[in-house]
Length: 396
Image 1 (spheres, one colour):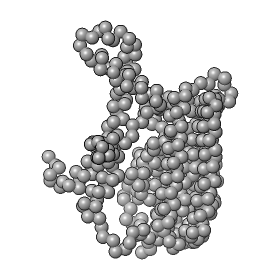
Image 2: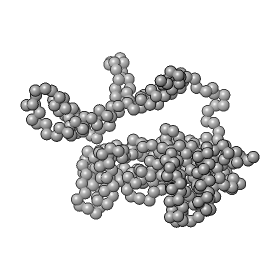
Image 3: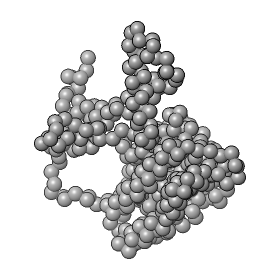
Image 4: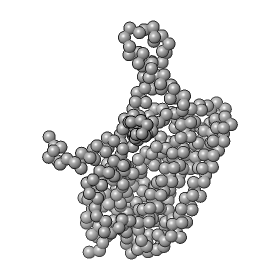
């Protein structure tokens, strides 16, 4: 029994059912690749890459709606449809998405003799090719960095509408780069919200991306999308400097995160040799980490909220980061905190006469307090509980 037949036999029955359905309703399927998502990075459990020998227009207009219907009840599965010609071209151009996720060991359907990608591009993992991939990435990022510089220039000249346009362009080009090596294809659209929703099907939201569940962030995102046309065609477009301060911080974080995510994909490539077999980056004789080493690693990854103060001068800890919009927002938050405290006092009505925006003050204080919740440490405690306590001790 060959390796492909063995691989298909070992698949979960649900996945076998999906695979069978795909081949029943979609003609011209050349190959199907399946690999697992990374728990901390991806928003899915399984990634499907379906390669079809059909024109791109037919894939988008005829086959994609059918595939979307098949996956409707499988929300933890991320699926992509590519034409065979497109996939081969992107692979030859060094697109890390296809190099890393369309490997022979990921193949669950198709003619493995085609050898896509390794038999056709045996040198994909050599140093020269990797350097070209890195150079292409740096070139693709130049546009975002140029718009980031333009943003700072227009901010310094108090041209806030043009600064907003530059921020929009920096984000848009950044999303397109990310989509290329994380999704395999680029979303052709100028709305940042559309790019983010497309990308969130693949990866968890980063610091530089927008929280689509937060009203303030959605307002900011809508302003950013309006800036694309509004700053050029509408004299009425307006944005505040403190809103641009937030965008500046977000854009800087976003571009840093793109570099980090690219480096992770490049490191994944480097764990393979030219035969297409994964090689370990750890020494072969290294023992599995013991309990203490595991605890130390979890602590390093999840104790993120506080850092120790200089014990020689002061005991205790500093908060590692609290997200604020600007200096003005810090002072506004302090004022709101005092207002809420005044409102809590009994028989102090005379002190509340100057407090005009009670609901806004309470909302500001609650939003600030929410940022103090150490979610990372909560994740750490959950994992520590699993390590330290048996099932019998945690079951009621």
